[in-house]
Length: 255
Length: 306
Image (cartoon, rainbow over all chains, first blue to last red; front, side, top):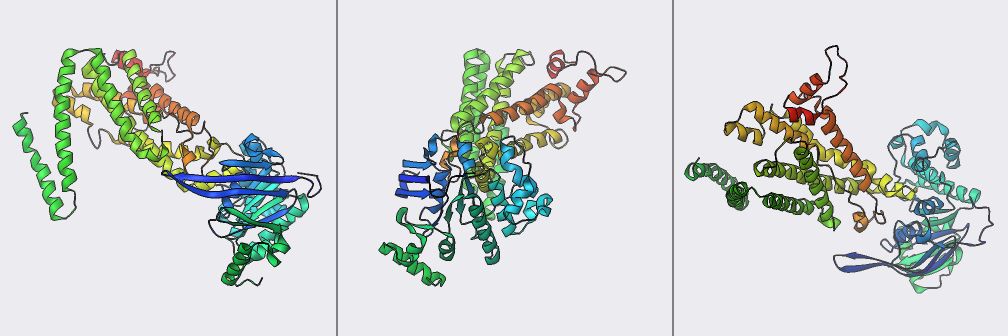
């Protein structure tokens, strides 16, 4: 857990990052020349159309995907210079659909320490931190509701004590009330531990509600990085305006 | 059996062709090709074997076995083409299986170093290893594909690629061993295996034929000597950066364990009570029921013919 004051240093820095995949001799570019800084202890919401490379950008931060050009710095050190297990403890990732490992909720919470041959002494604390009762500890994880599973997945990641959390559309598979719960508990975790959040979301309301900064990714290019209020009220780029208009009219979200 | 009488059996192919045309199964072309290919291949190998047996030159034995391994490798690799570069691992797996198994058979004088023993037994070992490798690759692909979310989740929690893939690797190994173990369980009850049948038809004592068949069966528990498929999942979206030591160690360890089980105590067949497992058990038990001080191994059993 970091004790440094908010915004004292860079948590994540993207420096001219490119990413491409090669399929049968054809090159498909996913990210082009991404540069940006995420300050420690801030919440950055990342929005953009489907297929714009949002998930890939997240995966670069814990080296599930490695950059083809440029650098990604975590706490001032390039990702490829980190020990991968240490990096992935420091930078937690929660997925869109909660993946429960076979077994109980307790088994799931223990999973991270178990991989390192360690014990987990206070599983109930982690359940409380995401608003779940310790009565669930011995329940079969697969029997929980979607919202509860996502909270368990979040708690399981928190057991690793990450400084940075990557959230990949963590509420979009949930019904609205569960989505709201999960969102509130994530914000709560952020407030408690000053965790840096890079939060991919399709829900512009959510991006506006929780974000301090908002980034727009279109076709692998970082179009705009701005404070969230300015992003939605007075975007600098014409492309952002168009994105907000079309997204707004499609979702019926008042902007 | 003359070529003329043999050719009468083509009537069966004719019947199948007729059915295929009648029911519009569209199998005629493949059936004709398969018939022609198998005829030419088998007749050719018949003459080649005749020459090799006559020459009795170690070089030709090695050459024949090398060709078998090459063809088997090429065939099994097709199951994992998208894994790129997997062929040499299959080659290692099949090659090592053949060398280890034949090494034991020959080293303990279970079978003599003669072409008529080495070549047919090698054919069966290599063929079985080929099927097992193909099944393992196929299964590993489908298991890792359908569980890629779990694998990603383990990686994201800081697990090593080996930790992430291990449960699915075990599944795949188990699945690829099932046909071998199942056929071992029903052998003799459902079907009389080919080699044994052949020996009996050729006039051998059925009990002697059974011994050789059991030798083959036990050798078949050997082939999961798959030396890892490390790193090849680099090419699959979602499994990027699974680094190198990936499958190798685990696969080898599991393979060794299965092989030990098959070789040293015969207990993998204990549920089936083969004559061999009963004989070994009997030989290793004193009249008062306690174990003897010098347990009889499978090798000694075969070597002494007791």
